[in-house]
Image (cartoon, rainbow, N blue to C red; front, top):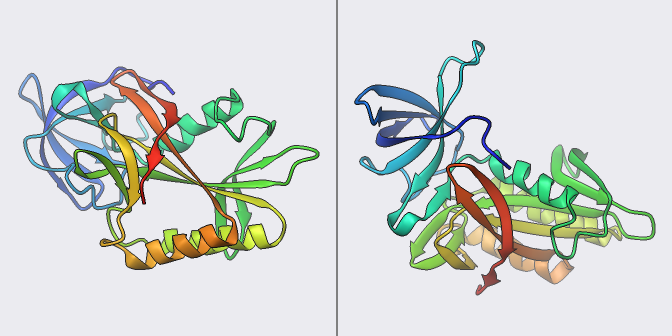
Length: 234
């Protein structure tokens, strides 16, 4: 998935009201960018961080910049736009590049299911059980090389796990897919200390037959691509 317009570097001044970020461009101008991330962004919104913005000239948009990446030491990146994982994953699914899911030819997004919920992707193929795929963007890292989810309490995520388990009980296949939007991590675990209820719900869903798939990403100011599986350590 390539960004629609070339990204430009900036320095974060502050993030506020969840969806706004004041930034300083390289030419010294200060601008406000849209932050497409309602989460806590723990460790990713510190003033002075080098970030990357996507400009736009859409007259319908009040803000002319969107915050897309955080740059770390060593040339590593974290993707902070929560809409990117589904876009990147859809491209990978359609190309048959996701191991274990490549046999499904029909891919539908945002299909209603459960109790007033929508599944990120419903995969279907004659002769195979329908496959419900829920996607979570993983951006938290509190230890070198270790990615964690969630970065804050997520009642919605806990609800999704229960609904995936119900799909398995009905004879379908269900996959909880964690997409690690960091290039500096090669391991993954649940952040049970941040949200014990989510960790417990995951354990119950796993026992019910919900599958887990953790995938890495290749990230640059050019775009985001789904990468190879990452080892889950808890």
